[in-house]
Image (cartoon, rainbow, N blue to C red; front, side):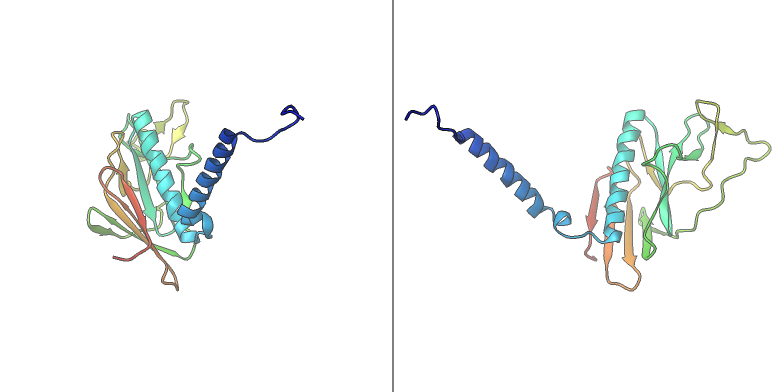
Length: 192
């Protein structure tokens, strides 16, 4: 019989399959977050870091300045209104909005080598009689932020240097998020 009835894989097909399997195995083995269930406090910090990266990208793309205000139970993103110069709470963006930490987390924030006391959110600012309300491009009133941000993300990519340390109540678990002036972040679970 001839080769007409023989079917099989070519050497190229086998090599491509082996490379794909090797790459998938390397990703799984080199990424410890895939192999183990990530604790909630670590997941919250990874989510925060992702949101900050998104805010940096959006700031650069839109030519806007954003900020982050931290609280004992979470954080919120702010937008610097270019017309009034007032910080405005971001409510129309689903990803850059208020987020809460898991209940058993204790955040500590250091900005420019100063320990910041995190206060609970204040009530929204009521405009004074002599203060004009802020409007968006559609004529809707936008809410001024009650307090300024702890961390500023500039359109040029610079970020206020900060350290966010998080401990779990009743545990030795710890995670630290560092960011420098250029917005380069690092996450560690080891105390210095």
